[in-house]
Length: 452
Ligand SMILES: [Zn+2]
Image (cartoon, rainbow, N blue to C red):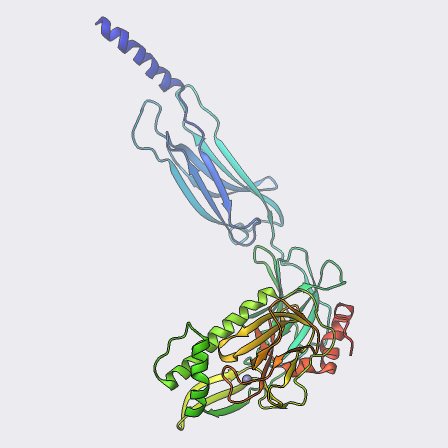
């Protein structure tokens, strides 16, 4: 009896004290918005956690200018104070779409996502609720966008420029033409909101009505405007190339030897088709990766040079059908000019720029790629020798190598391509001082500082 009093009474007293006064710790609330602003539908993740005694009712609301809108709520009961163990509901999670789509009264300005969680109480002790809030700007109006240049006359496979102003909230702006995005850049010498975008209509796009200048803020509010005043279709020409065993015997072993990642399939035609198809696509991807290294400045201010005294063996963007023993075995687009002069003719850099590539690359053989800034590059393929190194700055007309027949070439010639943001475009325009003056320089003015 005495032993019971000594041990039992204090235990009873402790238990009684706990039931009356033991409150739970406040819940831990985390609010994680997907973006640093609220737009039409911004995803917000909310986690409420308290694993020792659980938590009471949860309210999630959006508060703007003293008006509160309930986003979600949960009725929850923590473990009562007289129970010392047992299961608790310690975790709740929500993914909510917060924005104008759900809350029609939402306005531009600021709004607070507020989460309130009741705390587990003792019989005589009721702690306040846990509370957490995140205040974010509300963006509902797309960034203002205005074209300031006029007379946008563009050819299929050709380039143009648009000069425009954009609101400060824009995080992405430029021209979208099908799958190609041509980013806008600050206009050199212009005001804070003055921008320009060099763009092209892809060689295989015969309807340019969908080409748009656009600006987007960080929650996806988007302004769009049409920019093309006149579009000239230039349907690709078709061309048939007969492949002979002699040609394949000349090019296939050399390309395989220089391309260790390619597997010899033990058959000349199979190897050739893998080179003309798969390897061509891989080489295109490699060239596209150079775009990121392009300098955001005009590295040139004169027209581009072609190979002197050269005859053009192809136009830009020929649709080629390849036949072997009378059968069509392949189709590819030839996206450059084949220029033939004398054997091993010295090749001038088309314009001032920085060498981004100077090595062997599959179908192009020995190739040089020069960056001219703002995503514009020139490519020189099938070289016999390369006279420049990667990273080297070259002047307009400097010799960068000699013509040859490395890669997929039947005879000595230069394969010349101009690329804008990785998309091959018609070099003829860039060779033409009048075109540059009328289409680009007249709109860019001192930003380009073109000299004829
Ligand atoms: Zn070619």
